Amino acid sequence: MTCMKENTQFDLAMELLITNGFDGLAGAITVLLNTAMRIERSRYLQAEPYERSQRRQGYANGYKPKTVKTRVGEITVAVPQTRDSQFYPSSLERGLRSERALKVSLAEMYVQGVSTRKVAKITEQLCGFSITSTEVSRAAAKLDEQLEAWRNRKLAAFPYIFLDARYENIRHGGVVTPCAVLIAVGIDLEGRREVLGISVSLSEQEVHWRQFLSGLKDRGLHGVRLFISDAHEGIKAARRAVFPSVPWQRCQFHLQQNAQAYVPRRGMKKDVAAHIRAIFNAPDAEEALRLLEQFIKDHQETAPDLATWAEKAIPEGLTVFQMPQEHRRRLRTVNMLERLNKEIKRRTRVATLFPNTESCLRLVSAVAMETSEDWQTSRSYLKMNKNLFV
Image (cartoon, rainbow, N blue to C red; front, side, top):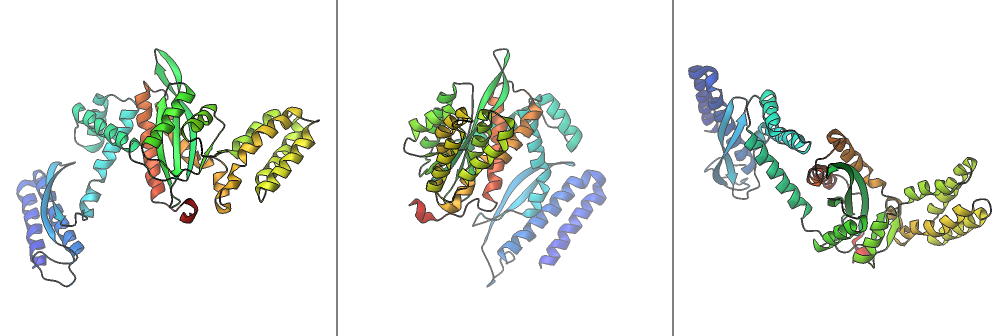
């Protein structure tokens, strides 16, 4: 029975082509795509329409019309539905890849400041059909709506939070001004990474950080056991104001770099780096503090500025010893954010200069959201024992 129906639909598609030639392409594609989607739904349900079957996995629930733009014009297909709402035909999904690619291209061009008229011309040349400036603006507005919803979504428990800042140039008041981009990444109770927040502002650093962290808290962030960041004064002050009881781990990688500024002779740099590395790689906090005390003692006469700096700064990089041993290696630095920052830089380099903070926020949010979604489908970043965070 099914085979006969398929043959009938195929014959109908061929008749459209024979009768109308190329003008019948849209109709033929519609018929064939509708047929493919019905066949796929039957396979998903493991039963034909009205068939009684022990293997049935659900029930059909009619059709929903969907208009799709193609190279042969707009076609309206009947997308099969199921009662569990879990089915979506892969045949249509594959057919819509070019549409999704177009939307991504529109978004890329939009955030980079390309005019809607130019976008319309480009899409007509690339895709074979025209798109109006109104449609470009509508797609851009939809993008902004999605990004804003993502930035304001509710948060849950994240034991570990990584904080970082980068700077992008924007045009403000007729001059080029560096604009702070704040980023927060969390590790959840399953050990997976997630970008929790993005903020772009010209405001004073401490004020910006305080507003940013307060926003995360208002969205439901809780259960934080450790913050990891560089020694931004704004971060330190804001963290004490918003999360006063949560300890802070200073990035050990940046500490190593900072130390070199206090080494008086070039010949000492390698030895100093090795000694600081030994402190960070100590098996426990007691041994790390012993090695630090010895380091300060050894350099008090030969490099007094280094000794003074180390006495104050290096203990800020030892907080990680309070965390489970199996987690320490990945909590010592903010290097985990390197991939995200590289991808942001790769995209913003194309834009060069943003006309305002909104355009910068749009692009950075899009990159962060994309990266965060990739993280959610990849392997866990840490192996978590939930009993540790009860």
